[in-house]
Image (cartoon, one colour):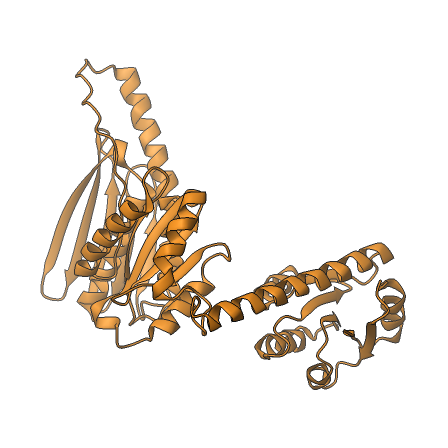
Length: 409
């Protein structure tokens, strides 16, 4: 079968260099050069397996538009794309990677590098095509669904159970909240989830609007980060809940029961993720006389741990919610005396205040002031149980309460 490789450039010197450098090992492979003008229409007709795109100065948008068109074309989805550049902007490279670039290479690279990268991309394309063919076959057998190529309800449980025997990981059950189920189809939700997980993660449909996910070699903490990433990708008026647990020390059947029970509790609250993590019971330490020096050291360590948790978390929550909370000013400050995360708009002013008086607990006070009333809540967290996950969950609830008070949707 004849493989067509296309070089897109307006520079004759570059075309001559690349033609000499790209050493194709099969006689059936053809390298064809075309100009940038109407390059997509020409590529669509040629249906190449590999494209070299020479980046023109100040024409980055043209390349990104071309890349997007190629990835949206059904006949070109598996085509490899190598960007050839003279001087490359790293921001452009990151954007190109997100849109589906395969590789990149400098114009002045050696003959060997061009050859190896060309052959590597051809091999990768063959692997992608083989994978696509296998998924198409599994779809015909109704093992995978046709749209998202994830496991159908009849096979999800069996596949996850077998995969969990091979390695440890984390099992999660995700479902839309009751008031969100008519706002988005299960296929659309699955598509969004699939875009925000790894290729090695296993996804499948289950009954009652549920989606099963199994994250290989992933802790509860990292699973929560993935769930938050999925949550951020959804629209503001569509919410999900989840229950999840590690499968390291328990069989899959038990993990499924635990995660589904956690999901049921999460759905009652709405827009919530609940982790099931059974901890062995520990005997209470015997009371001893307080050593002043050890106490000071313990306080210093706890304050440092608290600051390490709050600084990046407050910053991340501010950046995540600035575009979602309209006409709301978000400020945050972290220091050893008192750390604050504040939300303020004309209707409400809310403060999330964290202090550590130097004993065995961290104090959290939430103050919500509206035009006609003021509410205060206090929480206490044992320093031994202090974690980023716990603070993050409380902060998410705080923001959600603020949205409710100000009728932000």
